[in-house]
Length: 409
Image (tube, rainbow, N blue to C red; front, side, top):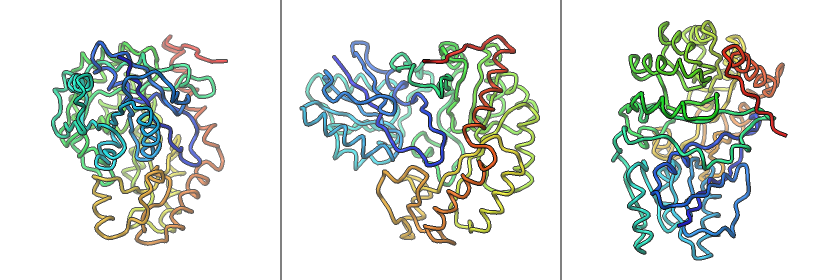
């Protein structure tokens, strides 16, 4: 049977450097498809959807709330042709009840070991409206190598330079961060994949540059150190969310090819200043993740914070606005206080104010968001800073013999 898997487009953040990464959810899901299913994948962010495609069954993988409405539009077009549509992905889990009104079926939870049942039901004409596996996690040992062969690899480069491939070494997160929905999606228990499975997948990826998309690698220090030891021989160059602030961990990370980290910065403390310096001491660049709109933020606070961010010499920075996604503590607090002013999911892209801030107007917070982007990149534009980071990683690749030119016409 022919299964068409679609990843909807969405509006990128204003001021953000424009490039596309190969999506992770669809390639992980595709690895769990039954052997007799022929799959074609379309990432609408890099190529148009063929609404006349020959498909027996359509799946739409929706990661972001800002993709929902477009995903529903795509579903409606195929359903009008009499083709059944199933929705899945993170945003489908966060907005499950709404999604049921826009598809023949929704899949909630992790895919490993579950898709055979879905396709058996489809073939038998008994497709269920909901397949709910939330909280019922498959054994982490069953998570295999993602099916990256479905990707159109030529589409994922930045000005002719090959961008990163996405991979994960664990699921779940023991932390419970205020704006994050991972406790609902993947559970509060840290679930590391076996090292041999991770290394097998890393070695199989025909790309030297990777993004390890785990919520945080700093969850179990001994596991983290062993992971980096296992990665050293692969000579990959990678970025990740925070890693442990520990000399042995940082040294092993650098040896394993750590290129840069996304480090959340909530304040202007000496702890943060030292944290950034220590990354730099080990040759690891830092892209700061800065969240605007918390209840103690004022215009003056944000301006002083910007001074600090420039002082600590971040390699790059990404500014976002607090966004109340369903199934987060942020949503609960703002919803209960009647402070959510906009429920248009297209605007839930972390670049638009959709709630009433505590100490400024929504308009002022939106203005400060643009102020931060413009101030940080005033002397060196984002494109130039990114070029400098890419040059550093290419220099490292040339030094260890792993550099592969991938310039496209």
